[in-house]
Amino acid sequence: MDTIIYGMGGGKMSDPRMTDHYQRIVDLGKAQFGIETPQVAIIPTAQFNGTHAKIGRGNIDFTVERFQSLGCDTQEIFMGAVPAGRSETRDRDIEDILHRSHAVFVLGGDTRYLLEVVRGKGFVATFESIIHAGKVMAGTSAGFIWLTKHCMSDAESFHSNQWRYIMLQGLGILPVAGNAHDNGPLPEGLDPQVSRREQFEGYFAQLGELPGIVVDEFAAIEVRNFMCQPRSSDPAIGAHVLANGPNGIARRKITPGTEIDLRDAAALRDFALSFPD
Image (cartoon, rainbow, N blue to C red; front, side, top):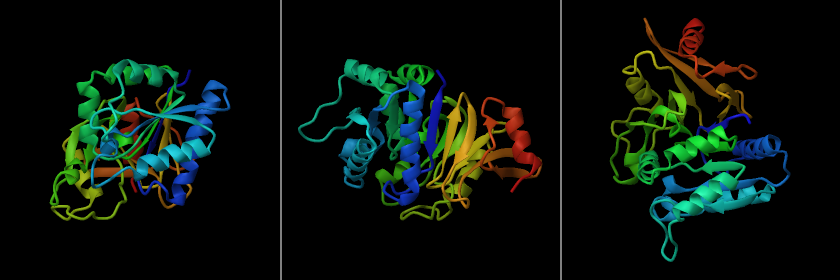
């Protein structure tokens, strides 16, 4: 089985530019397992499972309904905070759902909370194993960057009106530093008023030779056996490789049809430094 990761750079879930991504995830699951009705596990942990006043359940309900409309069977996994009248999914049931699923979709939100819950419950090895078993691991924003070695998150925004981006240590399944919403606007409450892209580059400059992958809102990367290519319905947006070089940070857009090996740090650096944007 191939290992497949599909990481979306965030953006409004119902935006038409997201449509192709949902379909692609379904198609990947069908092709990987030779089936017509993929089972998709939905993980809304980063959205506090719908209990946070800032987010609610809108994105969760949309995601479930979208995959069902594409012919999938869906099942939610509740880890962490749960709505009144609901219970956390039992550990043995989480294991069972993940291993029975053909694709897993992790919603965006508070990346730090997602990582804390998954690590606290001891499920890191489980996620690693299902990826190696060929499950299509997909997600948007936090649901993408939590798989990288280092990532920048707006986790503080869920707990304060004035907040800053923070750098987190992700699971490291993707051996790069990762950023979503790389082309995103300045959000409300951000202090200082410096774009996510600029703040990420400030952190990235301290990471030495570790390469970076950044993804714009409404774009995605598709990673098959660590070979990465961009996915976007709009040529103006996509994904870039970052590297620290003698003249500062270089970034180079991954053109459609180009594949890069995320395991080869030296080649990624050469890619970014050879023809920087």
